[in-house]
Length: 430
Image 1 (cartoon, rainbow, N blue to C red):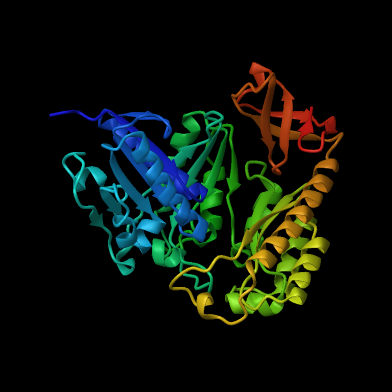
Image 2 (cartoon, helix red, strand yellow):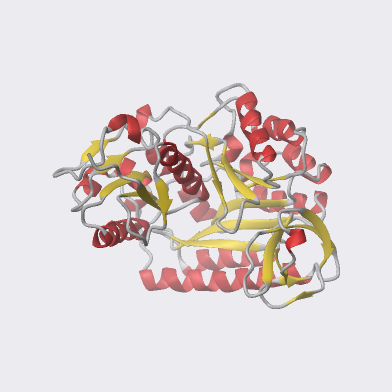
C-alpha cells in the first residue's frame, strides 16, 4: 500500500483558524507526514475555511480547484466554519473527499483509515447544538517562533444579527484555568516571548466553569519567565475595570486592546443587536486612555449594513474620527444565510459599501500615522522577529507599533527597550 507522506494546508479567516490548522498539522507530523507549502505537490491537501464573508467561501472553492490542478489524485479535506454550516455545498465540489465540521476537525485520523481518493465525499459534521467540545490550539508566526497564538476559548453566545459564527462554532466554552496555565507555561518554556490569547469571544472565557477572563489573566501573569501577553480582541462589554487596571499596572500585559465597535450609528448598532451603546463605548475608550500609559487601541467597524443611510455612515465616520484610537479594521457587510440581517430592509448598494469602506480605511491610515508619530523620541519595549528582509528586521512594540530596524541577530526574540528615532510613513524606525 502506498504511504502518503506529504500534506499541505491552506487557512482562511481569523487567527483562531490558523491556531487550529497548526494543531491539525501537528497530528499529521506525528503520523509521519511532511508538511509542504500549499503551492507544492502534496498527497493530502487540507483547507480550513471561514464563513464570515461571501468572498471567503468563493475563495475556498477556488483553492480546492487550485489544489486539484496541482495533483488531481490528491486526497482533499475541507474543514472549518464553512464546512460546518454548508457541508453539502462543499461535498458537491468535484474532487473534495472529506468534509469535517467543527467537532470533527481534530479527529481526522480516527474517522478514516486511508487517504485513498474517493468517488463521493464523506461528510462528518455534528449539529450546531452538539458543538460542545473544546480543543486547544497554538500557532506560530511565519516570521519565526517569537509570537504564539494560543486558543483559550471557543464558540459564542451572542446573537449579533449579521454573524454566523455561533452557528458555525456553537456555544461559548473554555477549559479550566489550571489546564490553560499549564499549556501557557509550556509555551513560555519553548521560548515564546509574546503569547496572543485568541478565541471567538475571548472575554467570555470561564463563564460556564465558574471563573472569568480577568482571573485567568492574573494567573498567567504569575508565570515565571520573560514574556508578555496580548489579548487578540475583546468585546467592549467584557473589557472590565479589573482588566484595565491589571493592564495599567502589570508590564506583562501588553498596553494594547482591539475592541469591536461595528457601527457609530445608534440606529445601526441597535439593529445589529450589539450589547452596548455609543455612550458606553466612548466612555470606555476615554477611560482606557486615561488609565493606561501609551496605550494602543484598534477598533473593528462594519460598513454597508442593511438600513445604513449616508447620515448613519457619517455618524460612524465622525464618531471614529473624534475617538482617541490608533487604527481601524474595516469590514464590508456581506449577506450571510441564516442570519437576521439578511431579511432586513434597506440593502446598501455594493459600490456604496466599497466607497464607505475606502473612506474609513483612509481615516484609519491617518489615525495610525498620528499615533506612530507621537512616539518618535520615546523608548518602548520591542520584540523582533527572525527574518532578514533586505538587511532589515521587523518587530512589534507592546502598544502594537510596527518597528523596522537594521538587521541585528543579537536582538532576535528578545524583549528589548529601544528609542524610536523616526517614522518613515509606514514604520517607526530605530
